[in-house]
Image (spheres, rainbow, N blue to C red):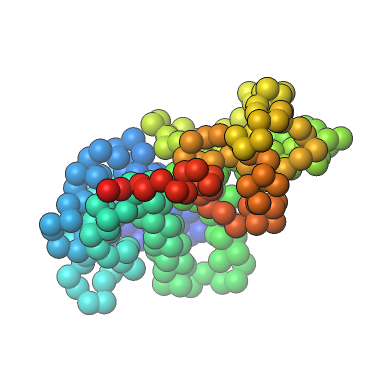
Length: 251
């Protein structure tokens, strides 16, 4: 836990660079280095934490021994839940806690070095412009980019693009990390869904109807067929269709 442990950024720009480096390291652990991360999170070991460092490296290690620690500590005991949850759910849980830790570290530096209200607001704005680790991991960052691009490029067809954005499929885990904040996903458009059939009623896709995709079997459904409204879909992190909901994930 030495990499970057004694690095103390003092300006908003330095704290943001520190945030981006730690974030990149943790994203790497949960995506491109996922097999090694999984191996290191042995449930037989003591309470372990996932650390990200300013040099874009990551480490699974025991928490700091000093009390109070030099920096805020990440979630404790992530290894214990590894085999008790579906892999995707476990990684999503680690991602959420990692996002919380990154914010805690960034604003710890802000408090320590006397950032005023304007500095804190600027720091938060810079951080908020980046997708969270959870959004990168689940693919919702891509959904948001698609939705924004669709709205700006098809203002005359706003309802169609919004329906598609709300029902967008959660992406699979990324095998290569790109600069997700710079991605412009313009290769997909509404026409690709023209031949899509509802997994419940078998009818074709229609732009004036709300659709939602199952994150497990990747089939598309009319919202009305599976009793999901656009408002309810906004609060669903991972949608499972009725068929997949009735399957046992683990023995």
